[in-house]
Structure formats: structure tokens, C-alpha cells
Image (cartoon, rainbow over all chains, first blue to last red; front, side, top):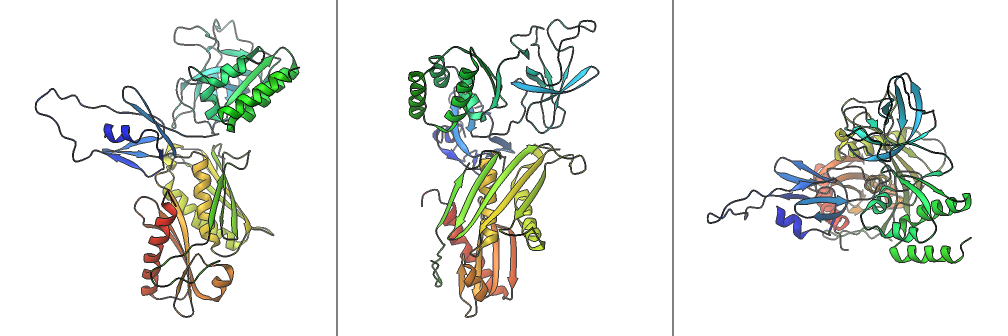
Length: 244
Length: 209
């Protein structure tokens, strides 16, 4: 199965395609036998001894044995460990309810902030933006967010200050921004300095030195979603030349 | 234009599809077969009202809007057909207590409308990135007074025929998922239509045309 997955890497797959153990998979009696392990990412599901494709997209591979389907989506489905930007909607007792754009609201305890105790409560109001990560995120339970990491430090998470702009883009653009050598991010760095918070639920928060620059950045990111790399570089160059 | 097919050839009208054309829905598609054209929008998985939520799977709602006027009983029965097909191919158990909404807007009706709704629905669900176990497509056949079978009939051909049948077929095993028939026909003619659909379906599902 590993070989059939490897040879279809880079191809477009549709729901209904499947991979199964072929009859020609032989075990050599001569050398040591290592069971081949395949790690399935998003878009692939295991059903018995077959691997089914459930989303349409391009099959990707990462060494040594990780496979997933790269698909485009606008709606966010929560996953454990992902950092998102949420909006506080309800403040009831010990728990805040946060809207992150999913099918239900997540809960955020007031003790899940750095340095907060029962006497020292964090300063969070309804309507504030919080940058937090998922502690519990599966289909059966209510999602739960925290603003601290495993060792109790904030690590960049918490309430986002005022003066910036929150806007939505597709999930694909967010993943491209967060990838290690992101071209979009390096093109953006050449324009003007700005502060950018990237939430994996498709929400971005940007703040530049003037309101006009903030609006330019938000418009650029929303429009470069569907552009090719060349069109995007041409657009950024045009903006940099006519810069204000 | 449409040709009356002989015993072994199947002709479909020119069909076309465009995805991601609307900015607000999570997935959208427009599908046209000849002059028949439908616009579909998919939302989900989103919040659901407590009265409509199902504890172990997503709630799928299909709304069909006609070109003029309010939806009537005919649209309700078409919604039922589309919803049953979608529920059979979507993996609803991955999103319990959520809602998936599919809105189909009729742009122009020139025959084979139910199969156009099915095709647009499948394209919109794919564009929204919802997990599916298989793709599906819709095909319409009409039997005219002489007993000839016409695939993908226009409105004029549907009116002159004595039976109109629509089938939804899945992409993996090429079996019938849903059938909706109108008029009088024999069992033999039904089996002939199902044999005809295999040809038209393999053409719709081929990635190279």
C-alpha cells in the first residue's frame, strides 16, 4: 500500500478512491521483515484494511511515512493543539464562551491564563479577541480552549490588544502563511512593518502604524487568496511602488 | 441540441460546472446541462437549533428555490430526493450535533431539472470540503411514444414523452442510489434505461473527456 500511495503522490484524488493491500505484497523470507506503517492525515480514513479518500484534493507526502489530502475549505473544524482567534461572547461565572467560527462555541476557563488565580482574575470582557489553543477538540464533546501551554506560560496567547483589524480568509491561505518558508509572508515583509496574528480558523488580525496601512494589508491578504504566485508578486510590487 | 439516440449511442447535452463562485457560502457551484442551469450553495458544519439536532450525526437540510414564486409541493418532493441522495453519500457521523444546509436556486428549466439539481448539489458539497464516501451524479431518461429512449431530454421532449425517469448513481460501484419516475413504462424499458445510464455515467465520471 505504501508503494501505491507513493506513486499517486501529487495526483488529484476524489471521494470514493481507495487504497488496499495488493495481492503482490510479498514478504521476503531472507531479510528482516519490518511492518510498513502509514500515517494518515486529513482527507484519508481507514476502513478495515482499506484506506478511503473522503475529501477531494491533491495527495501529499512527507518523509518518512505521512500522507494527507491537501484540500481547500472555508469552514473550520476544531482540532486539538491548533491556535485560533476567538471572540468572547458570554461571561458567565467561571467560564467564558468563545466563538471561533465552528459549529458550537468553545469554553475558556478564567484560570487558563498566565498568572491568574481565584483572587487575581484576568481582564477579559465580552467582545474581546483571544488567541488561544484547543485543549479538547473532538466531535463528541464541547471544545475547550486555553491560553497557556503545558508549562503554564502564555507563549504569545491571551487577549489581543486594541487598534487592529480582524478579517477572514480561507484555510488554505492560513496554512500557506504558517508554513516554514512562506512566500506570502516574505512578500508581505517587504511592504511595511506590521503585526499579524494568524488563527488557524481562517481569522487574521493585523495592525500597522497607520489605519490606512492596516486596511491595505487586510485587502491584500483577502485578495491574494485565489491568485497565483506571479500575480501576487505583481500586485505587491504595484502596491509597494504606489506606497503611501 | 439533443439527438434521439439509437440503440447503442448515448448523447448528452453539453454540460458545464463552475465552483467557488459565491463568496459568502462555504461551498458553491453552478451546473448547467444545455439550457437548464442551477446554482447551489452549501453551508456547514454550522450551529444547529436544539430542536433539530441529532446526537450522533449532522442534520442535512435541502432548500430548493424555484425561478418565480414560493416553493411549493413539487419543490418539497424534489428536496426529498436530493436530501436522501446526499445523506447516503456524506459522512454525517463525523459532525454530530451540527447542521449542513444546501440551497439550490433554479436559474432556467429546460428539462432534466432533477438531475441538474443532483449534479449541482454534489459539486457544491465537494467545494465546501465536506467529507463524503462517494460522489454521485444525476441522469434523466425519457421514453417517447415510439418506445425510444432519450437521455437528458429537453423540456419539449419531456412533455411529448410518456415516461420520465431520473436516477442518482454513485461513483464507486456505479449503482442506483435514488430513482424518481413519472409516467407509464414496462419493467423491460426500465432495465433498458438503467443499461443506458451506465454509458452516460461513465462519460460524466471520466476525468479526461
